[in-house]
Image 1 (cartoon, rainbow, N blue to C red):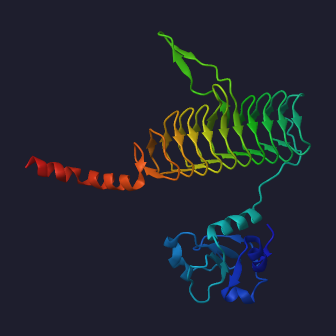
Image 2: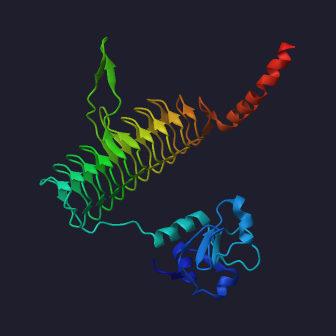
Image 3: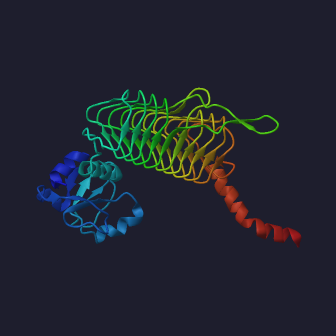
Length: 335
């Protein structure tokens, strides 16, 4: 990893030098670290005010601070609009995403009808099915399975043991973390009076550009039509997306979120861990769900919701406060 100067850092993140570093723009920086652990050749950032006290003791060469954040005398500063975004940009500079170089392990099984760009990497024991197409710079990790007729775009990363089942489509820059499953059968059955009759799941999964699916997460294929994750959607580990769900662009879901079948999630939504949405609902653009929320009806765009059943966050705060008082109220009523 090549060191760069503080002046180069400021250029990368669109920041402005302040404090002592104005006089040392050529000071070399080797990476980013926390305020508590950063050394004299590292930068840090303040994105959470609970760590503000560490500005007094940090040994970092400089710290990313917003224009409104105060700092102790003698601290090197790079003023930026968003310290966390600046951290992300610099971290991506030091640790760029890998790209395929055309390495194919001898144990990989690649169908002769599959079409791979010249610089696609295929790891040990990976399997690529008939008529699959894979774009330039993509990496297929160890033990991955790419099914028949799958289309994978450029610069994708499929980490170890991830699966893309037949007919599914991945755009450019898609990342699947280890064990992710794209295109498993949706949970569809009909009761015939004696047993559950499996309904063929004839649709596909489509992941648009820059989607990331976490470790051991699952996105099920549609029963009729497709399950779609629009551009820039990010799923954490152990998320379950059921058949025929559509998730709007740039929505994010934390670990163990579950979305039931045929639900439509709007653009730019944020779901806390272990929240869940029932089937055949519509969640409007920009909705935010607190962790463990349970959604049983449609949600209006732009709302903040919590609780199970989910309700507007302010109402949930009042309900929670009342619940704490219920034993006392019951005791008073019994007197």
